[in-house]
Image (tube, rainbow, N blue to C red; front, side, top):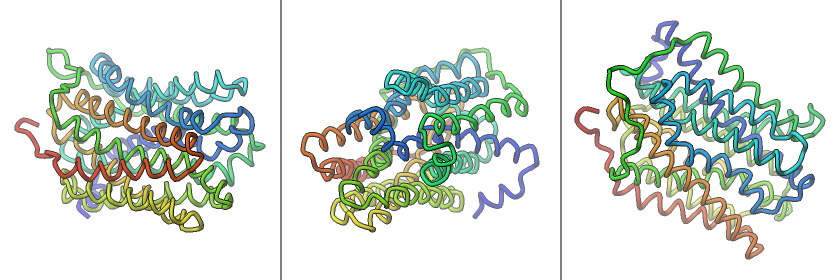
Length: 395
């Protein structure tokens, strides 16, 4: 419980900064996870098939890969704080305008803008944890990761039963509603945090070193786990519908996302005892494989349980992955190391659900999509077993 004790003993200024990190983490996911509860309405209004829905939910994830390296460049040029403010503004604007015109074109175009904002913001957080909390990086990582995971839980659990009905059931207004926290984060960051210029006269390097095998292995390990999470969010609404248990949609999505908060609390409590270890990644992959098969084998009420297992396992892998760049890379190299990991991670996260959705469309069976995710869990175990997570001299 060392990290929890550190949080209680932190000065007031540090608590404010940690709160802003938490809010920024929340905004990295809240607009993304507002989509799954709205999938039935989007199906109805726009006539998207499973591949189209997979692209809609996966497009921001693809942007997280494509824009990861430009995000590192932006950090090098503007500094981490200013890059984060710009990212938050893009998230808010893209989310608010996704429903403009209620047609496919603005939906996908503004999803691109929103995804670019998330992609620019994501590499900032490992950099800020190193710059703002050099002696408490595990604590800062656990805090913003908790915000990220709560940002997945809140829209997934509240959109269907509360937010959408309160706004008349329309998905465009729902997306606009979830854009508000991103605008709030941008304003608070500008008001409450100072700009810290990059230290040293030499320009900061921003291109990832893809000759470093750790970037590939860490990116793929987390990519397969993340693909299971995003894929389960994508497929659950139609899985429970075709199996005759449509009423389980909101409970299953809530379980998937609520269980992630438990993983962040676990890391907050155990901290250094599990950060940088291989076995938690292997456990996460095994849980994903078993639970994905469970979704196929038991399509009734146990869907809620299996969704929770996938959410917990994917979140455990995510939080532990986010803690690695500031631990393994030198201070100046954290943005580019993070960008390389995120590029590989999110490209894999995008490809997994897309392949699963195509398999579902081709066979007409949801099992094809879910067994694709199970295969990713198996690969997570294999890759984690050989990962080198030792801290390098000078890091």
